[in-house]
Length: 254
Image (cartoon, rainbow, N blue to C red; front, side):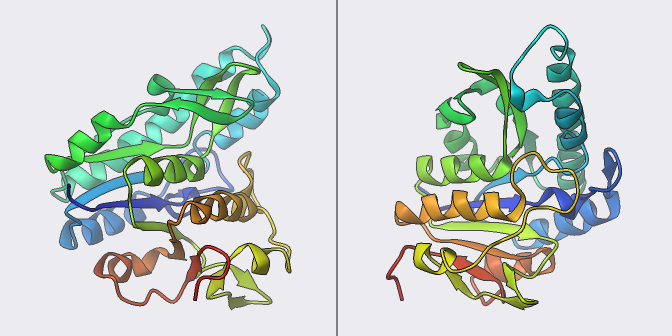
């Protein structure tokens, strides 16, 4: 089986998170061009919702559980993130990448905000045939709450484990995890306990940078390292060269 690369584009990279579904088409096409030039043998792409979905999820209080009053929020939130997904797929296809969008709402089930069912066998089969699946943070049905938001970061960890990926990257609008303005080159659980990471400054219902670290530390516990870096370093990440960002790894690893 070909080694699978799982790459996430942060929502703040491809949208203006201070607006409402303000898609940065220029940035999307720039990133798509990089991915077309440096094609991984098997790539699974995940993107955050950014300003397409987070405002709706917060407005309708999706994570608080379904009621007759907020039921329309499931539709409006899913529609917003689906619009962004279509834009990402279109940009990739314009660049010559054989991309197809996949909506977690259609194939995932959560309980208390955590995925309990998520089919990935078809995703593995797609990559074997050169298709790039493009997933995204989404609203999904939840056995306890009725509905919840599953972040792109949670999807990354689930996909990495299911696909046995050893190359996991998160492209963001910052050069890595920062402390006092400087990139922390390596984080394990012991290091993470020594500092506090802030959340997103704009509307984000999935935990911001702290949420990313928590998800990736859990991934590291399974023996899979991951990397957080600036979006301009995607090429270096795919090439396996230094990206100047942060590596999330298991405690005690060198």
